[in-house]
Image 1 (tube, rainbow, N blue to C red):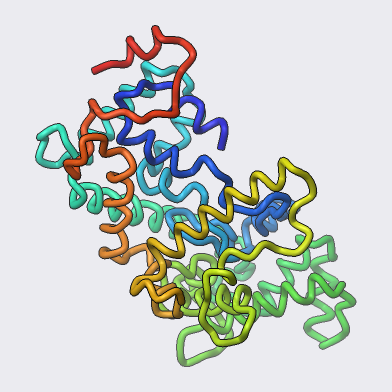
Image 2: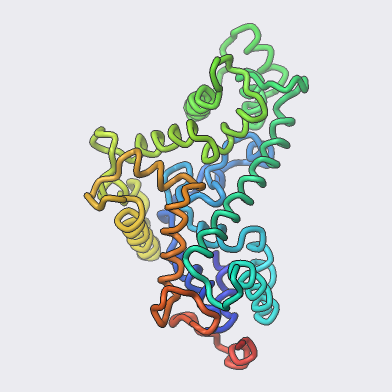
Length: 349
């Protein structure tokens, strides 16, 4: 995160309309010492066939944690890497103005919530196209005979091969229904993956996934049925009293043993504040203190236009100094100073 924030904060105060987005993400959106499944994946091959924990352009990750990059992903899209690699303020400023002009559809040099909403939906569609391309490549990797279908057993062989098992031996054991001799943790992962595999298998179920079904398996956020399944998984993981709903305390609870020192405590405090705000202001639509599956599904749906409009309004409100409900290039945030005043002066419009 630091590598992305540094060049953005160094642009100039006049770039509030984007800096506000970055400031939203200052606190870590994941508890200290709690890495995602994607980050824990041991090698490239495993990353290719495991459903990712971090879903681009989606507000919650597969484990129910906030996607700390969400606002940047839906604003910058493919340009995120440019800002991460390019730390020169003048170049970054020019890139930001190009984006500003694209969002400002009526060219009145200010961005409305509707314009921001359309931009968010466009960037979300862009993420979906990237997911399709990625899934297509990964499908080919797990479809050894190229028949356009992947069986659960074929996938299981490839998955266990990434865990260090001999692919040929595993295939032979599965064919003959012999014991695979796998550890408990791997077995648990396999069971969870098989549940997801069943959900992605459209009727009539045959446990053979087509390329489109495999996309639903890897990226459930783009399939209505799989989105519902993902919501159920998140509720299951966070729901402590078994009522299939989430209270605020359940949503913000930290895993046992997360905090190890004061620095970790500070990170976790910020994480709790972020989750509390997200719960109260965005997920709990009727503000009754309880999040239902339907509310969580609406919140998670990347193509929900009403949710995108709420996000647009929130992003504008963060940066709207004159409170006219528009973002304008002249507005600027406090709290993001650059040590070199000449850089600020050079960056003014």
